[in-house]
Length: 412
Image (cartoon, rainbow, N blue to C red; front, side, top):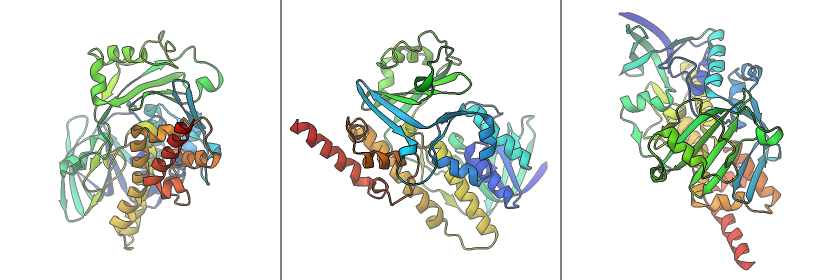
């Protein structure tokens, strides 16, 4: 039986795993990556937010993504009937990137993986993890390659960046109830040959059907566009069986985008993901850490997935480096507490979106510029900046501002 040896085994070659791999390799640590899929492969999480640019840059991957020529994203638009809320990242509160990209994830993930491979990291595609056995911090992972050959990987540490595969979460019984209410998503791509010029064909848009149901439109630079719905699980029961047939009926429910996509065939059968939010009981243990969607995945309404994936992948890699250098690492404080600060902020905004409070603020016809700028910074992913009151006081400030708006409306 073939035996592989690595300092760090990374499970998953998505953005979280590639950021971890690139950073560790740059620090002289021997990394081996196993990925169950064969790239290119489809994935959700196509709209990035500016904070992830910091993570890509620190891992040494940003320039490769720039060369790929993806559609630049300078903000986002929310539409509900006659109401409009538009956010420009260049007008956000505080420092940080004021743009990012909209990406077909199949292409984006290939760009990252190719760059990591070019740096000298070995990635085993089409390779399934069958079992993981820990002996203290050391591990022996049994894998099966595309030819069915069984091998064992001996590693001093495992970073599980397996995304929705959630390898260690399943192996070690770490699955937990999500923090966000049960929602599902259905989505596909079209080749938008008659896409409008200018903002209408460049800006990502979220059309709100009602407080709990929304539609996304993400245009890509290759001429394709991503269309999708997110709603409570029971909402999907109102439509025909068969994902594509159901989605065609859903598109007729739109107001702003009604008829816009009627002439286009779906590029693939609409896909559905049920109960999209995920959570775990533990983010780390002796000899391992969970990053990205393998740890926790929030509702996608604010496109936080890749940002948290790359942030957690980078932070995990930094702490592994410190640990390998015999420096003190407090995984609870330095990893869990730090990440959960950002996750808790975004969780509040997701919950208040579905409560309707955040929608009242976003769709206010005359928003106060400072409030809009501070919320924009949160939507850009800068959720660890506690100089922003909409970060520091997130648990109550959204509710309070929404109440003030409601009082104003009642006085009219």
